[in-house]
Image (cartoon, rainbow, N blue to C red; front, top):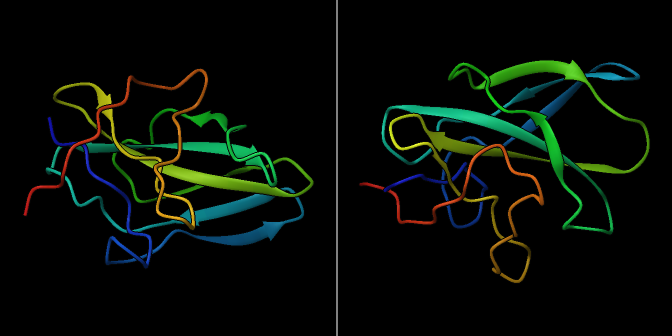
Length: 120
């Protein structure tokens, strides 16, 4: 199982996740492709800054797109884009924190998690 990671500008090279404010409560998310195999879709999670295990499902599929516009909650929030392999049904990494420690999956994830190295 190879589920990949989203580019993060540190350990995984490529286009990082960016958010573009379209209105006070609507943003566009843009990110690069996963480092995993080609049959990848993406999930979006949202959490409260300061509680980095608080992320909850906001979208369990982007249809493979690397952009999505959606409403967001007010306040100090963080967002994670997590790849999942449509062939085996597992989501990949939620990324690593600033200390290099893997972030935990959501309490109610879209898919079960499988951490494996990306294919070259």
